[in-house]
Image 1: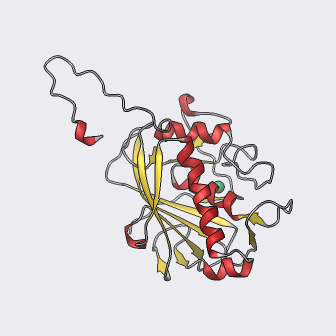
Image 2: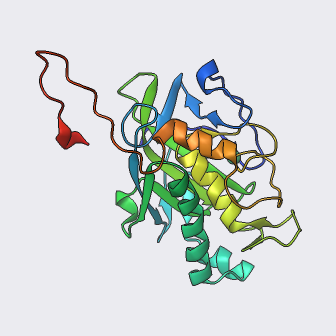
Image 3: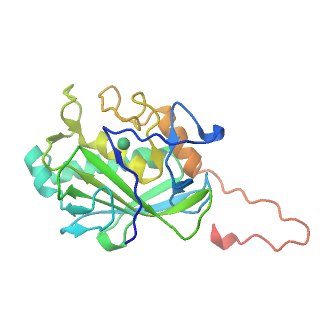
Length: 243
Ligand SMILES: [Zn+2]
């Protein structure tokens, strides 16, 4: 798998330039090789369906900068005392934040080979959590389509489900939601204040206005009606089947 990845982590800032229309203190679209990245169609503000799964056996992704080797999460969760059902609830809540904010829908599938976002534990533990994004390299343009995102957690760190004021131990829902933000095309906007900010904190556990604006810039508003441009005289009718 050819992979060009951004180095992304809860504790590492990656500055990225954005034109004025999408520059904001509150959100920052991920930009690699001059292109914005998103699922679905290569056009900003358009919806997408995204499948995710968990690693069920050791998996390698040669060339990935982050998460190039992943293993199942169960030992990490067990070590942190987070039960399987609780973990599923936390993950679902993390995906739901983004799905409620913008027109991007997530579905868990069981086949790790046929997914868009794959989640696991790092085989070589470092940092806290990372995301690796790979995109369609063939179609150069202002927006490119994501092909595979990997999210990996450090199994040597303790994790928790919920806030307790101890910012040395990260809440798995918060960390998951942050990494999902990267996995769908968002970068760090600022050190703090948004869920996509790179400093971990326990002041809020849901998306902030900037996070929502970033998701909407990529995928449009949730449930927004499909706008079909009026056909020009003599032009063929729009292909409705594509929507
Ligand atoms: Zn991050």
